[in-house]
Length: 324
Image (tube, rainbow, N blue to C red; front, side, top):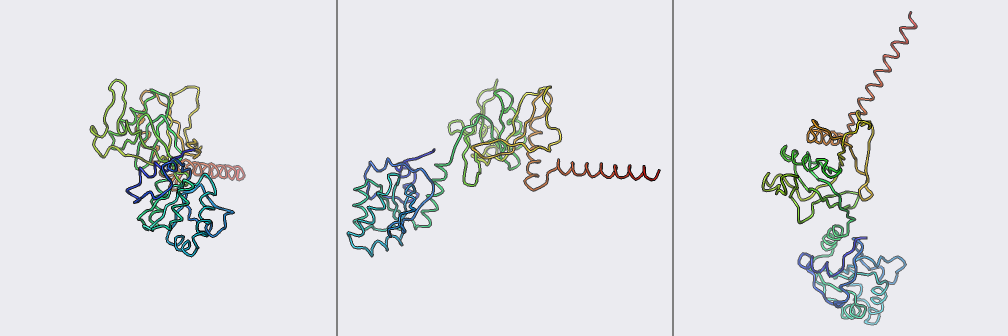
């Protein structure tokens, strides 16, 4: 499971989220944030904790602050202690709108070593910005050996054995006006809704390794319009050596998929042999996949026409036999 600590949040988003550390101490900054969801603990502060998602970052907005103001000092301390000590998983608390907290809030945060922040942003804005950040940081990730291209607006991941020709195919696609996202090492993240995004490793981003040539800077050679920082992965094309004993799909009726981080992605197995223009085949496969996204499945439509034609001919033959 991907995690980050509260100190990372403070270091990376202190300026964007206008964060100021008010309490909890340096030890509390080592607490882990494990989920991207946010919680407002108003119900828990009222005493109902049967369902309290303590593993989430807790946001105290104007509503919760005003509610705490109706308590006596002892009641406020008791309610806050119950909530903030509910679970050791509780990562931190953020006050919004630049609210000046009651002294008991800081006292309890210090006593339990729960990081307490104040943000100058309004509650809705903070929750939106923080959720986007946490979703990005905590998204399930994996690394795939392959080449990721953006072809006709579709993210195409080329995979296959080392030396099969992935980079050479990508190079030809670049010459034909398509964009490189990553070569050799593709970092894949799964976002909400089962959407996969791929990017290149920071050190080698926008570079390509070509056997016999070496490392090239794609952006400098082909221009800024030839590269893309990231793209959605919508099609996987697996390159493999042509084998005479293997019967490859020639009609396209079967819909093959592969699993990436538990998400099913359309996959095409493309045999490689001398004389085949892989770049053109990848372009055509991509355009055909775009048609499928629009609900136009050429192979199935052709199959329906073929079955209809065969049925008509069969009926005509039977009718001719009856007349004779």
